[in-house]
Image: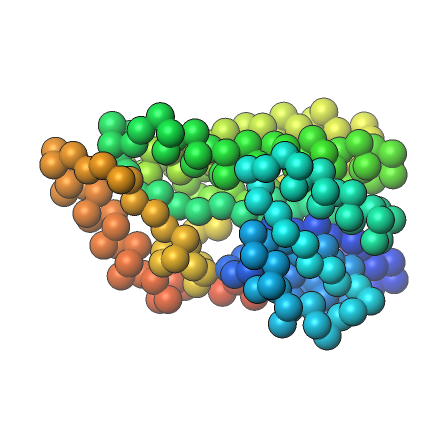
Length: 238
């Protein structure tokens, strides 16, 4: 029933981190489906090939989720262009291999700004629009690391656990307004997560080297070999 409704009434999607990975796969699927899309990336020129075939239904705009002004500008652009926002997908983020003792205060804050606080800002900015509409859907990209803690990934797990708790509580807060919240908890998928999007701490401590090295080598060895297909994930999300 939902798929038929989706075909009859195109939705307006706002997706973060559309340059690669889940964001790119989902953006492509949304446009092929006939929905409208405000695609965002820190370097929007990377999105030209994505949107060039959809001049009426796609728009690309710069978004750094750590910059509040960028977030409000993106929400305003979505309303100005399409008149509404039906689905927000918080996808932007990256991994970090490090033991907690190895990361500095600055690294911790920067990591959470991108991987948690950015999603909070976007949700807070979009919710007034969705409440006024009386409908909407927020999709937050979490991870299996939001369910189970892994050594060498304490910050990443912390950010995803925080996103999980916030999303579960938010779903109850906004249910009376016709707004839904969905958590996506992927395992190993063929995205840039294990490669370009995987960072390491600037400082290393020998005592943690065995664990951190093992985690890093596992991610690198899996890069490109992950069993999960982002295109199939995109269809599942839709």
